[in-house]
Image 1 (cartoon, rainbow, N blue to C red):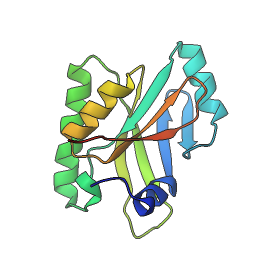
Image 2: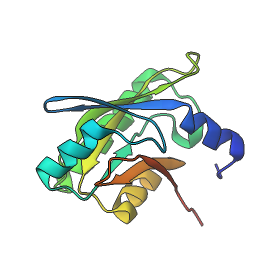
Image 3: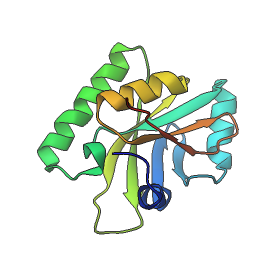
Image 4: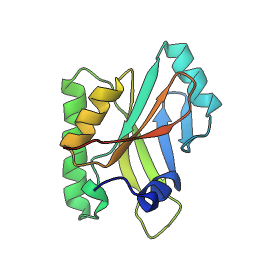
Length: 141
C-alpha cells in the first residue's frame, strides 16, 4: 500500500512502546523521548528502528498468522546479528489491536527498510541518537 495522508495520520496516532533494559519508552512520531535519548547515548548507539511483521500492508490478519510472522522477523534479526528488544505498537483507535514489534539499535535505515519490505510493511519507525522517532516509508517498485 502506498503512502496516503490517511495512513500517515493513523501511524502518527500510535504509541510505539519499547521495553528496554532499565525501563519502558513510549514514543510518538516527531516527539523527543529523553529516556530513549539517554539510553542510546549510554550504549553509544547512533540510530534505531522499530519494525513489526503484523498485519502486512496495513490489512488485519488472524492472531496466529501475526505471531508466526513476528517470530520469523525476530529470527531474521538475530540471524543478522541484531539484538531485538520487545515492543508494541498501540493505536489511539482502540478498535485496532496492539501489534508486537521489535526495537533494534544500530541498524541502518536501508537495512531496516529492506527487512520491513520482506515482511510486507508500509513503513518503519526510525530515529537517530536524538531519540526522536520518524516514519520512513517503504519504497516499493
